[in-house]
Structure formats: C-alpha cells, structure tokens
Image 1: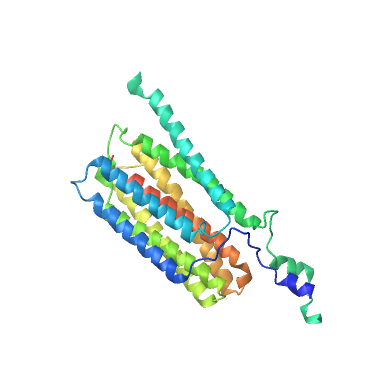
Image 2: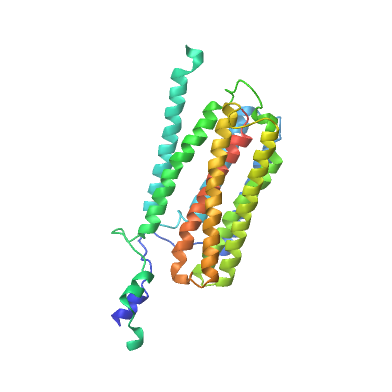
Length: 113
Length: 204
C-alpha cells in the first residue's frame, strides 16, 4: 500500500496555508478592480480636484488594486507566509532604490550647483 | 497489488520537489525571481518619476498621452489576470476544456495589450517622440518596453501551456506549472497597475 501512497503524493500544505477562493470570488475581485480603474480614469478628468489630492487618491486606488491582485489572484493571502516575506522584501528593496535615487538627485541636482 | 507498482523513474516525474520548508522549490524560486524583478521595475519606474519634468525639449507627456486608449489597454490586462486565475482553477478541477479556453483567452488578451502598445509607440514616434529625443522619451520607452517584453514572454509561456494541454501533457498533477506561469502573469499585471497610475495618470 505504501507504493500507492507514493504515486499519489501531492504538495504538502504548511500550517499557514488556506483554501483558495472560488471562481465566483475571483470574478467579484475582477469586477472591483475594473470599477476602481473606471474611478481612477474618472477622477483624472475632474479638473476641480487639487493636484496633491488627485495624486493621493490615485496612489491609494493603485495600491488597493495592487494588493487585491497580489493577495487574491496570486494567492498570497492564502499561501505560505514565506512567499509573502519574499515578495515584500523585493518591494521594500525596490522602494529603497527609489529613495536612494531620489536622494542622489536631491544632492546633485544642477539647481544646487 | 501489482497494478499499483510504478516505475520509480516515472513516479519521480509526478512527484513535486519540496524544500525543507515543506513548500515547492519551484514556487519558492518563482517568488524569489518576482522579488528580484521588483528591483528591475523599481529602478525603471524610479528613473521615470525622478526624470519627470526635467526634459528640456518636447514632446512632453501631456502632449502625447491618450488616456482613454491606455485605460482600455489597462482594463484588458486586468481582465487577463482573471482569465489566468480561472485557468488555474480549471486545471485544479481537472477541467481540461476550460483550462484550454482560459489559457487561450489570457494569451489573446495579452496579445491585444501588446498590439495596443505597439500602436501607442508608433503614434508617439509619429509625434516626434523617440527613445533619444529627451529624458521623457528615454525613460518612458525603456520602462514600457521592458514591461511589454515581459508580457510577450508571458504570452509565449501561455501558448506553450496551451500546446501541452492539447497534447495531453498537462494533467491535473501538473497544476503547479500553470500556477507558476500564473504568478508571472499576475506580476506583469500588478506592474502595469503601478505604471498606469504613476506614469500616465499622476500629473507632472
């Protein structure tokens, strides 16, 4: 009987893994993503919104869309925490690259010389 | 009992490779690759943002961007993430017919997106914006060009999966292969979510 068990071995799940969503839930997430995209484009055309407020609104909506795809479609919400840590490390390093580049432009900008 | 005995070599192909963590090595490798790809796109997006408004000659972003057109492209890529995850769901249920439908749909949506990008690039060149025209042209074409290349590679992988499925070489046991390609595809989508907002929508 042990040989049968070996031939049907499946991916073992760690304690922090959960069942994936249903197709209906995926469609619901996609509809929300589509709606947020429509709102993003809509607010872009509202000239009465101050620039800083518009920028903040767009970044928040983008972050919500980003999180929804990563957490639901890429299953980070349901899979092992190790994957989450790996991906977040990449994002943090990417943001660090941005800050380093920003600081270098700040210090070496032609306007400062 | 004789019927349950398998060729060890053949059985080894069916068994996924797992690390000491109990997780699939291939999946850990894919997440590590995506984390490293974050750095590539982080650098390219940073370059675009930090060079924004520093071009001394035109054309400038507000003069060439067609937001309604790019919005449709973004929506197409967003929906391709849905069809990709439905393909994964199909193979996990061993529904080969739906797997092929969703894989092909995802590849088609990706191709539509690439076609849209080619059209956009062509129209920008006609308006006088080339990669060497100014800082905007350089940072824009390199960023979106790299993203487009990622989408193209994704389409090739999707078509390979579709071909394997047609030949009957993508059984339910190989669902992780679809999941890995799916992770790559969704990553390409989330990068475009950032590009659409940071490059196209946020005013300079």
